[in-house]
Image (cartoon, rainbow, N blue to C red):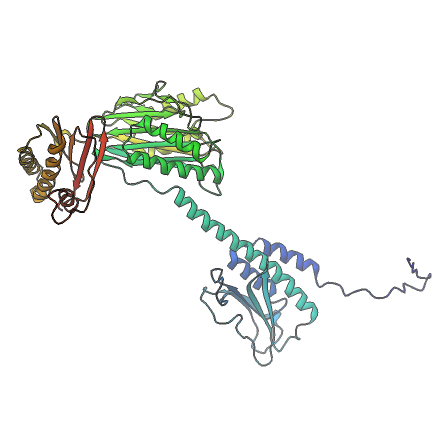
Length: 535
């Protein structure tokens, strides 16, 4: 039943008095807008102090708990303090100038430190949001102001609630940023230093500016025999899902490269792996192997855009890899072949992803031609060339990856090779050849180490070879020794028994060399080791 109460004319309203009016809604609204725009937890704490002093208190002190203190006793630290510089006669605080002070984030004892003294009024308000205690605010009034009333308590509670939400969201953003940074670094670690005989420059511009990582990747992988693998790939899609698949494929490529497989076999094996990892994915990839000794480069492509070869005289060409370009990875056993090209000294190979050239309103062939012309006209250092190519590409929402390699080669005077008959005198002959070569290179100080390790490997090769063995010595930043034979069985480092007559040679090589390994090749295997020259 509804009751209609009306006032008689001239007598005024007889309605009972309503609830008390909320305190200062205009101020509360303006303060809420300012607090929600705070930058970071410390910024929210400082803004809260500025809103509380001098309107509600003479002094405000905001404490924030350590976000890493989950599961441990709460530890709070003062973030911001604001106080009124009241006149010396203890008069009204409004005559003074408020001062805000930021405090370092040092831990403090207890949930909230005791504040206030004789003649002050103290109000403690917790900062809570989303079921978490984030800290608290301590407000004090001097003897010149009345104690906190219900209206002041309500207003202080509203302001601290808004500030708590701002602190919570800022801490969540910081946590997400830290996680994103860890994920980004794990998904896209920096490539190793460039191997000898090649100069490397690269750029990566993510399409997702929040994650800073996407489906594009590149790699520079050192191989045996001073060779280097250059890889560029592009997983279809954007965001974290594409980045996760990219990381798996990148790891797979590095594993396949360690097996010293030819470029076409690497991409075919990568297709098998990709279909097991994500059957519906599509990935393009280009894999090239540069040999600085023979100055040749083998290239295979799985649906990727053609690389650009810039010759020594500045002439640039899009490499026609029709015979070696197969379907993208993920479509099932693409027909891929390896194309061999000459890699003359001072020539450049430019690898890139489609984000550098593809635009919705431009023809892809015209964009490729513009890229080729720009690459041929731009000279100077590789870093400058990368900047020029990115600037000409313009902005895009897609990932952009660029990898530029300038071939330097290894000087012929730093390479020595021989073909020898596999018999019992061959290890001694090799030790003499190594000694003489290292003397010519001015490295007699490490000759005994290289001679001893080389003799062990050559003796093992002579034991299993049926045809000529190959021996090569290469000087770069390290001394590389290689011996090849026609036996496909790779040596394995084992622990020999006390009475075993064999199996100790590899232990000697492992003790004398910085690194050693073995690789299967078309005609057998190659076993190698490296020794660092003495300073």
